Image (tube, rainbow, N blue to C red; front, side, top):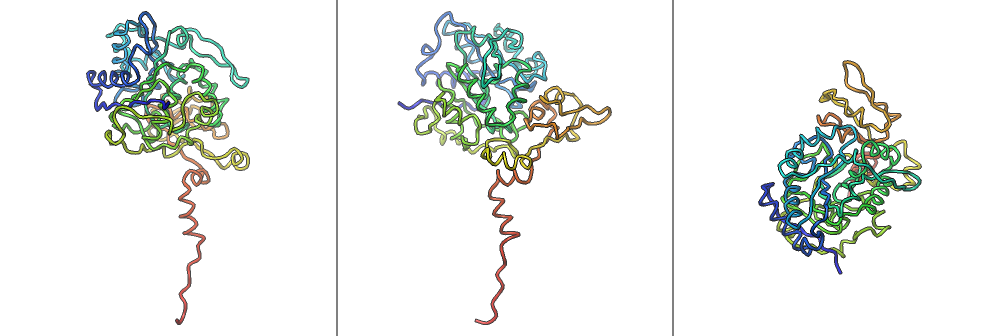
Length: 395
């Protein structure tokens, strides 16, 4: 039986409109009683990546969480809200800027510090890591991601959003250990299989395209999407937004482990059609690490395949990039912009994620640019290597 994914038109973040769209999604999935029972505790897990305002489209809009708070309470359950932001940030600043402190105060809902709430230890490939205990103390998790492009994983939605249940600086440590996007993708797939939310509602009213997840461009798509199977939801979002799932580094591991439905022909779209929503292809990052080359190419040509963050004149010397770098490759220079030691840099782009001034630009090697843009090879070939035909004299 095909796995259902529901799209629901939602043109604005007006609470009534968001609540209506969310109700339509859950009704199409079988009703709230399918997921929630009276007396349960439900953890709502948004994307709270940085201390950004809702209009910047970096974080899940609080209106979507507000709608879910009302629905969870209507089902007789208790909602709580929690996420772990970038390790370089103060979580209270994130709550303030994103509007979540005000939201949870108004709705009298507990806002959880996942970093300080205890954790459970797990192991993946010989590497120990923790998951915040509230994820397991709750009876179920509702995953509420923001739909965005991502310079490291190409796309971030349901699956990638669960990285936020890893508390504090462990996220930084894991970036250091899993420098290759595909190995990082393997970890993300394993993490998602452990947590596996009961329901996912994705915020694409205003999504982010370009150099996401924090420095991209807000784009109005005007819909919410939902599914019980978050993997199927990501698969569907990739297809309707014209993203090749094979470029998303966690998809191979999801397919291999059968964590969720990754086969497009086994997914059925319910609700509003992509045509009715007038969805256009999302603009991918101009530079992304992504799933761009076989490991054999890495082995042979790794030194020529690089992405380098560059700190521009927009830098405000806040120091967040220094705190976020997992290998301490960024160094403070009194009276000047910070400098990056490219021999230490692992191209994880954590500095780019946390820079709220959008002062960090990404540059890639010539060879990597050709691999990601094969049409340029033809242009170069035609320009430099194609012999021009000489005109014949006579007939």
